[in-house]
Image (cartoon, rainbow, N blue to C red; front, side):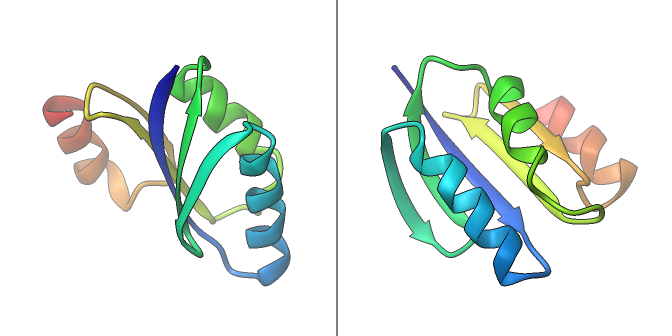
Length: 89
């Protein structure tokens, strides 16, 4: 199993709760704080993003990273930051 850190920025308690419920379905999880969790799964980062983005609202942010070796994200703060992550992760 691989460990991932999942962070998200939510505008509503309802979205946060929906994401938390989805994260719990992985079975092995640890909430770090309201918007950051660690999970263990055989899934890829992109599979996790695809699963979680179904329950977030437009404009909310989501970031998933595996031990700094694999990552996927939605709505990072601008193209400059997105390019930095692509280059440096």
